Amino acid sequence: MKPLKKLIQDVAVIQVIGSTAIQPTSLCIDSREVKKGGIFFAQKGTQVDGHQYIPQAIKAGAAIVVCEQLPETVHPNICFVVVADAMVACGQISAAFYNFPSKSLAVVGVTGTNGKTTVATLLFKLFQSKGYNCGLISTVGNQINNQKIPTIHTTPDAIHLQSLLAKMRDTGCTHVFMEVSSHAIHQKRISGIVFTGGIFTNITHDHLDYHKTFEEYIRVKKKFFDDLPKTAFALSNIDEKRGLVMLQNTKATKKYYALRKPADFKGKILANNLNGLQMMIGQQEVHFLMSGLFNAYNLLAAYGAAVTCGMSASDALTGLSVLKGAPGRFETYYSTHEKVLGIIDYAHTPDALLNILTTIQQFDTVKRIITVVGCGGDRDKTKRPEMAEIACKHSNRVILTSDNPRTEDPNKILDDMEKGLSAAALRKVLRIVHRKEAIKTACSLATTGDVVLVAGKGHETYQEINGVKHDFDDKQVLLETFELLGK
Image 1 (spheres, helix red, strand yellow):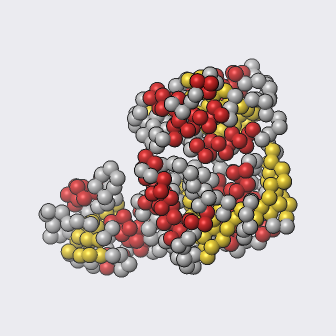
Image 2 (tube, helix red, strand yellow):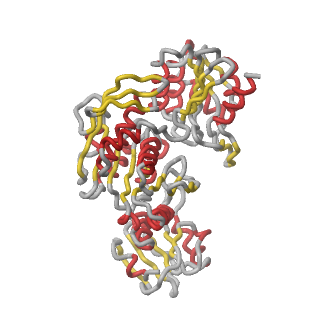
Image 3 (cartoon, rainbow, N blue to C red):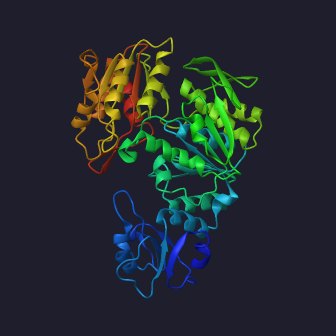
């Protein structure tokens, strides 16, 4: 254990009341989880101000309180550290508490609206296949080599994140690949991490319930690259409209990947079908197991990052050529009875849904597309009509259903989706609130050569309704339905 004096060396401290010789036993941002002798960080969140829980934290045994404002009562036996930003301080102190794990690791962050999970997972699998000990921090789960660790957020809070990085370091990891969400950037959860590199995939409308405007969402994403050290690399999709802007003010070494424009890592699609992608990357022709234009970009991003991290181009391409993407991302399953193709995908933004549907439309063997889709409750409502419109424009039949309604009435969510539909589009639509029934109905409507796309939840194995997570797995329901229909 280190004394507080050591832990706050790099923190913008305004005032200290009490002894900095105390050696804290633990770190906490939730007053209900405070341990005796620990530090409590009073953070101002979007919903709750942690300052109001300082008395409870002290009562629970906190020895140190890090805050932005002193409470009315300053306890004589408690050390108060007043800082400019408690969220930033939390990351910095957590990093020091765990002896700066990111300094011993090559940490590569992936940000963007779509593709984060796939790119991070591809890099993790690629480096693992080449004999590296690796860590993965992603939406589908955190992983230390082959040990899987459950996850709640795309990026954990700063304390858990530094603890996880320390475990990765202590188990011999050399590389960590992590998704970096806009929430994590805005809430400074990545404060205290020294990144080796950052990757930008793309940006489209998402999380406007949180960021309020698209401009603010872009600004937050850009901040990740603005804050990269000059020792890092920044790899951006230059075909993306804002690919240059993202790296405009970064101090890191700039690299670009593209299919259309000149770039450091240039690719060309030679063939794109259900069997995968045939691509020319540099001077090398390669076949990949993954399909779709969006996956061509994901593969290029992973390739570019791997080479920038020191892997040879030939090792990177041969390794990527045998990999499949992340769970719940364009997962394909065939029914035996009617030769129907079922696809499970996490597409929950307009752009992601459009990418999936236009990819399916390109395959010659597809007769009809039947899409099952919904929108999450308590999230960005502006994308609901757009999601429905895209589904109808690029599908033969559409079934609107529940996603994770959370605290909202699922019927009102579907009402919002239908607002984006013309009378002609509505004739394509069935409305089935119960998601299991919606998937079963879609499968029963399908005949030979059809595709049933189940979009929105991907890898998730639950459905959140009124604060309760119920067991629910799109993949399981799809496969069970295929089996029943085949009997």
